[in-house]
Image 1 (cartoon, each protein chain N blue to C red):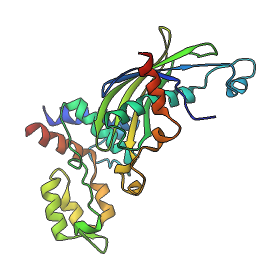
Image 2 (cartoon, rainbow over the protein chains, first blue to last red; image 1 turned 30 degrees about the vertical axis):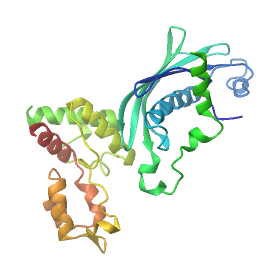
Image 3 (cartoon, chains in turn brown, orange; image 1 turned 45 degrees about the vertical axis):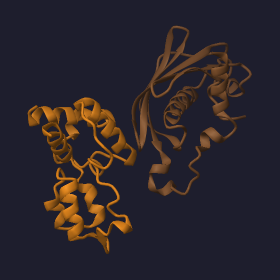
Image 4 (cartoon, helix red, strand yellow; image 1 turned 45 degrees about the horizontal axis):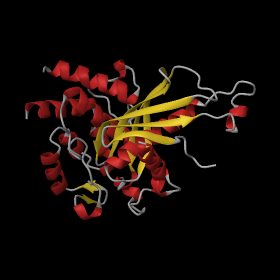
Length: 157
Length: 128
């Protein structure tokens, strides 16, 4: 299993906003334990999907030259359950961007229903002294192809 | 904008960024030791101040950077040198360096990061 919590980008306006979708399937094993007899998409994994959407939005702004990591979630609110068969749409807006990192506001919808919203701050690891030795090529985006996820979005456009 | 207005907005900024209660945010409160700020919170604070006061804060302008790096030559035996202090006075005039100069250990600089220091910075910035 790969740690991808978005399936496809559907829209990307560089430096402004991104939309990605996540199809929730009963085939996902964690849903059988969360909870037995009542399958609900875990809020933590929705937050991960929101962070991946926003993180790629920020990374793309800088041509993926920085190692973008989730640093802080000042606010997150969950408004409702997400169940197998639902398609989550994550919409991330880039609010701040600087050499040290950036911040996004992200919503999660199922259809017109708002199910979660969050504010997320990212840090550019390569800008904080301890990690200067790391390869500048972004490790998140170079592993196994989140970038190719974006290309699927482009191809479908 | 009056000093009281600036303080109120700075206080609201810190309540949002650090999740503290508004009565904890006094002018003397230190961001790390009293309000529990961690390194990433400083970036959050910068973003929020920029938004709340409609100002732009270039990197290193509010919180000094590279103070302790060996090649800067501002630190000797863990103490900030006279030359380092002179440079800091120019670069970060909003920090209370007179108090810091009495015991200029590098690690003490963080105790100078107070709510008052943020208010000073915003006041200077708005006047510029």
